[in-house]
Image (tube, rainbow, N blue to C red; front, top):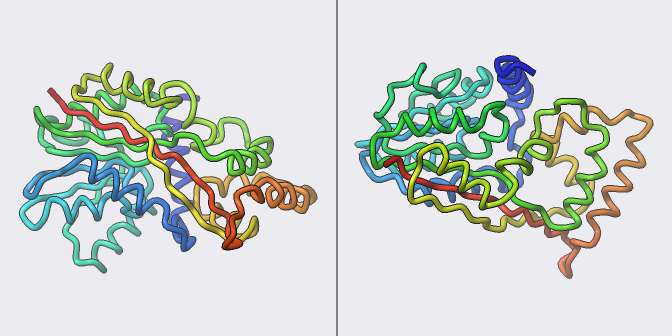
Length: 275
């Protein structure tokens, strides 16, 4: 698929997801975005850039970190996400610039940002190495960059997703199919990707994030507010009862004494500095 077509597909997918995106009542993108900002360590007064901002999981922690003397620019390919982000910023009284499009030296001034975050974004890009080098060029010397991607899930969660994956359409744009292979496969490959793009002081490590849910139906309701919605949409009606039953069985080993399913996702945080 041509890179421009791939990016158009990403924008279209997130336009569709935008109204209910991460509104499933489960702490997910918020904790990931907050932790990414902590590790990227922007300072008061910094100019910060959030790439693939979505509904603002990292954007608003950046606003808090840089304070009233700093400035945050949020970029997303999806016009619908941009609308929701502007509305949320107005509700919060947060001062941000929202840009719909790509974050690159062609669209933003190079060498001007002190910090850049991209939470759960890069694995959607058809040219991640090239894109990452462009992001680094947007930083001033000494500027910090932070990425979050996905590491492994626990065995039960992995088994549940495996029930859905056979229904995935060709070229599906989802982290389960693009975000855990190639340069995204391990902490070592992520560190190598960032170093090859020109960053120094690179660190890549995994941290666990736990999700507690009552049952498989709740897992489905929650994942319908995420990118997995497109996999659910591909399941034929005739197959849905068996899919739901198989997912319920797959998740059951994660049930604990409180009668909740405790699912664990390893989140991979990779940070570096522009020399």
